[in-house]
Image 1 (cartoon, protein in one colour):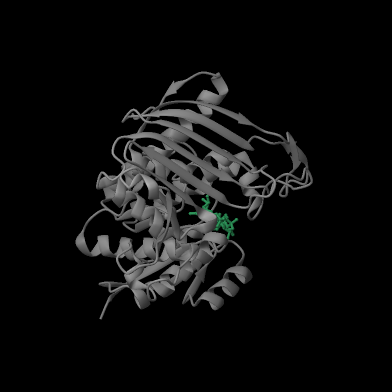
Image 2: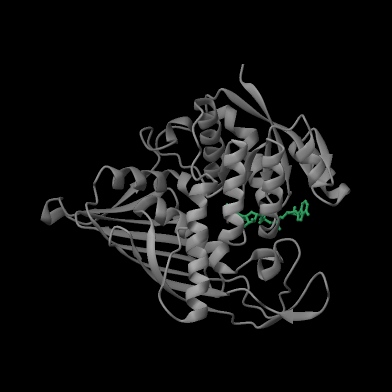
Length: 380
Ligand SMILES: NC(=O)c1ccc[n+]([C@@H]2O[C@H](COP(=O)([O-])OP(=O)(O)OC[C@H]3O[C@@H](n4cnc5c(N)ncnc54)[C@H](O)[C@@H]3O)[C@@H](O)[C@H]2O)c1
């Protein structure tokens, strides 16, 4: 019988739902020593959090996150709230000796992130950050292929994350979902929200980023604020592009925007090595495009690998070969890995320290865009 792990969930929005779904499913598909128990859900509005708890099967609710963290019957705190609350909640959870699963980006900036790393390391509590795209089987397979040397020396890393939902000037800033447009709640715009994913994957696959040159743009300068009702300055980056040099000498090119009409969540990457290249696209997330220069010349070309076979990462736990899984499963895999690491007493990557690396790149992006110059990524 698996040991119960009591979860205290803070937030019931997009990620609150994605994580709750993962906790509910994980033990049906993975053999694990622990079993998440949906002990308590927390948000400020009592009726709304009670409705969420009833729907997803949480045993109880709290309206004050500090009370949730103090509860003796909570083992792990899951932080699914806007970015400006991550640090304060994580520091309190670490001080209370709770394990922490924190949404990305780790923090508003790396100064906050460093405090969070110090707190979890001092408290010796298990911790992880939900950069879930690492656990899409095709992305995990990419990591394995690179580590096995199939690509050889890597020359180029290219990634995009494109959306189109903020083009209307009538869209307000602030409040559920729209806190992303409010710099006080988000810390940054598409860089912290979208590029953070691309950077985490890139660092994981290709190592650290040494220096970079970025530009950002805020296309709509003022928007009504949902909370104040007033038209206020927009402080986030609506679009961000940067080029960089990786520690291994590879060149990187990254772009994200919420103004690419026609694109909803087009996260793509392409990696070119001396022996082979790889491409991946979130809209077709179960496929990996692979070009191997070793192939016989007459037959050489891009292969489309359907990453659904039993020997593909995570896939042996799901259906039968050929049947694909989707977005939600990356969160199930993250929970499965967290629980497996817990049983082994190992850190679940990305842990806070690892996610601080992405935060340092995010800081460098905003710094470079402001100064209009190349900057080194501060690994301090
Ligand atoms: N891993 C991913 O792919 C991914 C995707 C989306 C969002 N995120 C991250 O998840 C976090 C939440 O984003 P979301 O899309 O779920 O946002 P959301 O707006 O859908 O939900 C935010 C939730 O936070 C709650 N909340 C706000 N202030 C609170 C407080 N003081 N006390 C308790 N609850 C409070 C709100 O009630 C709401 O339920 C952000 O950090 C975001 O960057 C990650």
